[in-house]
Length: 414
Ligand SMILES: N=CN[C@@H](CCC(=O)O)C(=O)O
Ligand SMILES: [Zn+2]
Image (cartoon, rainbow, N blue to C red; front, side):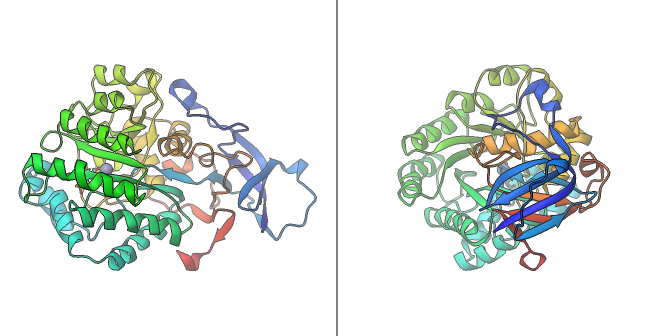
């Protein structure tokens, strides 16, 4: 199967060579090609160029993209897509003034999601998560990270990770998985006993079944301490799992420093950052990942993106799609929040949501840019005036067609 997309008004994020990431001042540059074609063959990006040089071929399919833009699919490097049920009752508690911590202390929050998930069968969980997976495909996402963390028992954590893996088999999404047993302390255990369960039973079982690429912990006041996080990361590493940490969401928690110390591939959230945290990230291989949907929904402060960019750091942008703090899997809305609330430019936001999120889940060689030889994951916009129109027109549906692994995803599948 080969596809020629022609008359593209602008082909966006064109990178002749794959990059590790884009950082600091370089994030302001988003390379484009005007009046372009894109040729897709055997599931890969085979060629691209100016329309005046278009190849004389007879492909299986020709798509005319007059007045439209072609983008590499978004890579969403932080989600909790596999959950049993929404939590809009807490939404109302929150409107009435209860804080995230107060809701959690009353048995709401993560423990509430865990109770619901424990009562849901693997098949039912899969069916519900698949709906969300197809939903995010329609929003332009082509690769996604999915965490456990709403199971909190050995069997239920494994159940989530199996479902996450099956999403990768039953949809065209590229899926990476993360074990997040250290998400909250279940009431049935003492702190010590739950950490023992994570280290001695959960991590070995996850590794044995090869269910996860990464290991995560919610390093936060009232959740996992720095010492506990470090202990869990070290055991995970001894089983081949790479750290990836929920850091500094509600307070300056030490999560950033423990991420750096344990060699995390990313530290995620970063709503609460000081100069020391920014300093700690400089010169490391850790991707600072911002989740503005959570700050928007919880009404907390947004991460200081401009200070981090000024310090020369790279930034990634992901949804955090989950029922408790970010019930939205729409990457274009994250771009809008990045621009409007964190003063990132559209160029910085697109770089953050493609190349840099691809780095954060080890997909930099295959995803995140229009580069020959990469997987043909792209979407075609509706007729818009510029790429900046996408973050500007927040909430609008501006995606006309999605192509994943070189195949056109039809409306019927969505
Ligand atoms: N912060 C920790 N975990 C999720 C939210 C969990 C929940 O409230 O269900 C997050 O990334 O925001
Ligand atoms: Zn999260």
